[in-house]
Image (tube, rainbow, N blue to C red; front, side, top):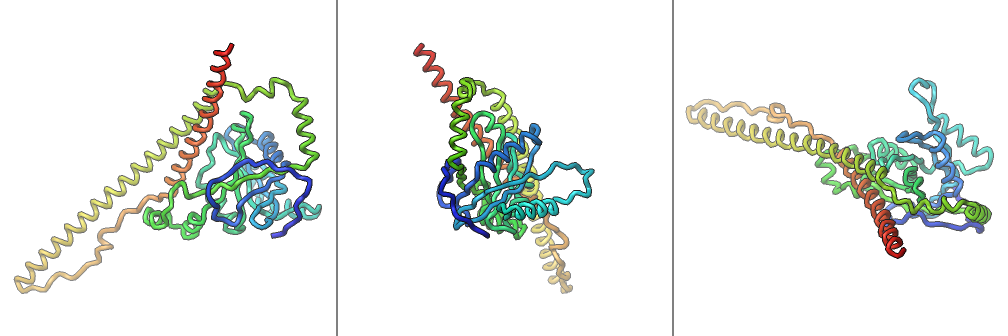
Length: 341
């Protein structure tokens, strides 16, 4: 990967942090403020409600830091656009950026999310393809619902080495996942994000803040929470229902497997008793048969979808926890102000 000198006229704001040491070649992500604005603008122009927008991240790698310096969106197209080639579109965009001397190296992709609903098989497959081809690739998840409440929600994720190995082997059976010792908490790793702006942009931001109205500055004190919390809990309950259905499927598989094992054991016992009787009568024993063909084991349900559902449930719980803790703080503050007056 190419590299460039760091700008000496920049200031940084840490947007995310992780606990422990990341087991990946990328320890930190540095994003230009322009990239963040492009992602937000892309959703505002093309995203509607739960519709997801996606795009490509461009940049370079400096030691263990991934610098994201530019991005461009995937165009919206329908199934009728059969002639549209996404790969060719990406190559033409990167070729055009290279001609104007802009960083054009592919370092990942971004996606918007609806109330934190991004843990899915589609995201897993896409990130595996990116990370398998480019080891430093990341996916940026932008949550416009949280951002609209006054706090920028932008997180970077990578697949853990354990999950990468499982995806390479494509062994999603219960035995394979048990052997790999992987759970939903070991599927994705969050990478700290640092947003970097030049001094000129910081001066502009201070100037815009001074010109903003008083009402805009106090939006964070809004006590209404029913809509956001209700929607989050509804999505959480839907995923819990999906989890319960997967549990029923696995329990059915376990019962069928146990029942087949019993039938197999009984058949072997009857076969052994019959051979013993034939030998006592001086007859030749029955020929051995292939038991595996007579008793084919039932197909085990794939467990990767269950892990993804568990990961999404955990994400919903974290979102509800963060939202309720913020609102409780507002309510306690409002109660104290009311008592003071």
